[in-house]
Length: 153
Image (cartoon, rainbow, N blue to C red; front, side):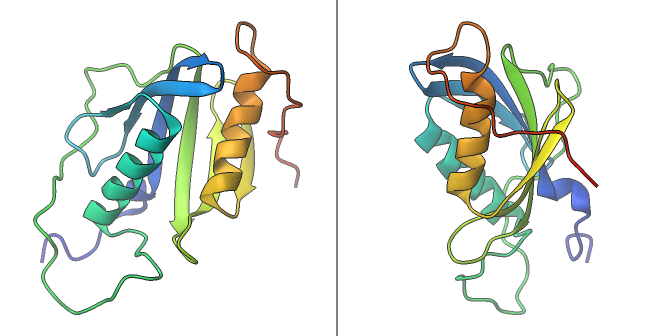
């Protein structure tokens, strides 16, 4: 019964971007469902590894997955490491996935250094938001207009 209900902290993943060269980001991410962080060397690795982490904790449940009243899977569980810095060399984002519908993610992303938050309706939109923040940074390639704006009430 201890694994029956998981708190909202499992919905938030800290994404640390350490490099961004010619549109290719690399870094690591942390989620309470992982014992330690996961590194990624490309956008594809980030999306696949993060989706696996969401599958392990099963929160939020994937819309297109079959559901059953069954014991939880024996995935990796743990807590985010407190000894490792959870800040990216270039940028740090808090990605909160609230839904996984239509084979994608919906939620919000917060650019922690700038204090800006934006909702996203798909994994592609999340990628475009992160890309827009990184494009505007000194030393990164590209010159796109930043999409992340201060949250307005």
